[in-house]
Image 1: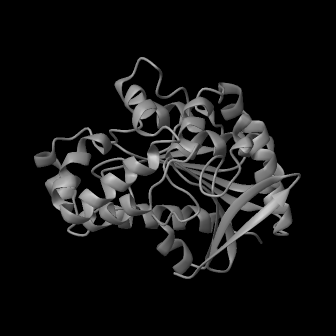
Image 2: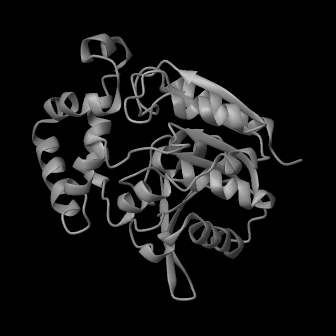
Amino acid sequence: MERRIEIFSSEGISIEYSIIGSGEPIFVMHGGHSDCNEEFGYKALVENGFSVITPSRAGYGETSKEVGKSLAIACEYYSKLINHLNIEKVHLLAISAGGPSGIYFASKYPQLVRTLTLQSAVTKRWLTPKDKEYKAARILFRPKVEKYTWSLISSMNNVFPQFIFKQMFPSFSNLKYREAKDKIHKGDVEAIRKMNNRQRSGFGFFIDLEQAHDITIEDLRAVTSPTLIMHSKHDGAVPLEHPYYAHENIPSSELCLLDSWGHLIWIGHSSNDVDENIIKFLGTYKPS
C-alpha cells in the first residue's frame, strides 16, 4: 500500500498524518505505541474503496505533544486537519488507546462524523497507578527510555520471533497459549514482529494514560452517529467491561464480539470476520 505522510501546522502546533488509498475517507485514531504508520486492518479498507487518513495522535510521531494537554485541544486540531483536507464527513475508526479520542471527537463534532467504529477500544477509566501494567509502563515507556525499550524488543523479536510471540501473548489474550492454538494463524508471528519494529511511544503513551480518565459517561451518551463496537471475547489488554459499557451508553450502537485470540483482532483465523463486519457496517452508511 502506498502511503503519503505529511505535516499539517496551525498556530505553532504540528499534526503528522498519513493517507492511503482513495475514496470515501476513514479517519483513524490509532492505538497506543503507534503513529501514522499503523497498518492493522487497512488492507481490506483500501481494497474496498476507502481512503484511510491516520494522524499521529498527541505526542506520537511528529505530532506536537502540546496537542495532548486535553482531549478537547487534541480533537480541535483533528477537526482542523479534516477541514484542511476539505473533507465534509469521515467514518471515524478508534482503536485501543485511541478510543477516548474517538469517543470525544464523535460527541463534540457530530457534524464531521458519519459513523464511529470502536475496535478493541478503551471506553472508560483504564490503567491506574495501582495496576502492575501501569507501574511497568511508567518505567519502560518514559519518553527518555522508550526508544531503547522498543529497540531491544524489536531486536530480540527479529532474532527469536516465535519466542517473543509466546512471551507477549499473555499481554494480549486472557487465554492460555495452548487454548488459543486453533485461533492463531501461521502469519501472526510475523505480524507481531513487524508491529514491534514500527512501535514507538514518544510522549504519546503517557498522554494516553491520562486521557483515558478524561472520558465521561456524558461523552458516550452524546454520540449520535451509528456506532459499531468490535471487541475480542478473549482480549487481555482492554477488558470486556469496556465494549459493554460503550454499548450500554452509546444510543445508536451495535456490539460485535469476536472469537479472535485476543486484543489484536486484525490477525488470527478470525481476521476475515473483522474485515467483513466493518465493510458491511460502513457500506450501510455510505453517502447518498
